[in-house]
Length: 347
Ligand code: SAH
Ligand code: SF4
Image 1 (spheres, rainbow, N blue to C red):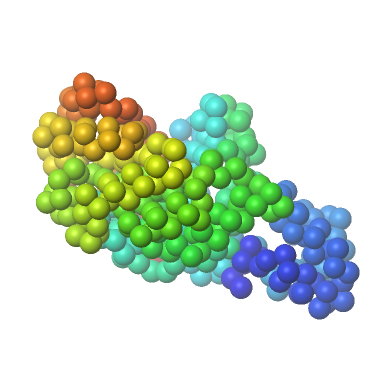
Image 2: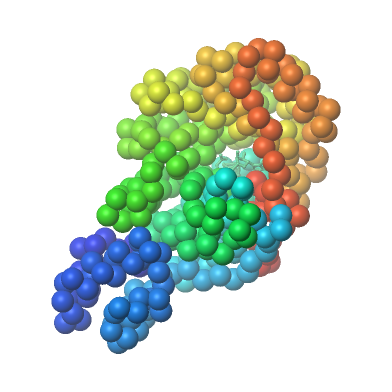
């Protein structure tokens, strides 16, 4: 057990009754932990001695080490220590119509994508089920503190923070289970998206385990030679195999996958790449999401210019591919995609 959110209701009941408390207390704590996203201090209907013991023996396990805001307070990047040990970043993004939290599944990442700051630091640790879920519970609480220009209510969860979720499948799937369980957190699975570098077995497992969860696949290139140079796991799961897995996901779930593409100046923003991407996206009925490359210390190349992005979009649109350019929220605080590398802590 690393955090209170790692316990099942049965585990919690065993603890609480072991301390001589009635079993209904466990249910009371559980509801407040998950549904109200309450801290022990806020559980004022519990006897103070019980609250103290819970805080000591089953801590919530979320400590805020640092916090930065941008976009007039609507984007908040928080450096969190989970379970007393694992340091990661979680980003809360408030829009006029929704609040989304971008969560981490690992501290660091082993996949080695050259342009990604998390990849540049290597893998430190997998997060536990509770550590993953705790970020979302924490976000539900924090959403209320966002400016009134946002709904101040958590709506969506994306696994686009640190780490490769399908390389920590067991804990990621168990966290999704808890978060979507009506008796626990009660978030609709359709409001969750898993973003993966393209680990094919994991995509198949996701289809079976959580067919309602959205799928985003980080392509970045539409030829194997270029993709392998940017995204090393492409050697194991080349584009044809990846497309097949995504097609199977689409057939089973009847949903559109997303294709993520970081726009890197003169590397993957060429007409040739757009022309190769178009038929793949069409076959998959995929939505293409272009992300202007965010600068990272270990990758000297810059993001594409507006003109080059425009041309890339034109090629896709002419081929009737659904495409959008993602905003670069939080760039000034290193909270944008791929920049989550513990910059705030120097850790
Ligand atoms: N490991 C998963 C999820 C985390 S990365 C994955 O790779 O999909 C989340 C997204 O940020 C991915 O699409 C990733 O390719 C993108 N990304 C990484 N580094 C980036 C950078 N420097 N600029 C823009 N996007 C980046
Ligand atoms: Fe890992 Fe995703 Fe970064 Fe690649 S882009 S190194 S898979 S976090």
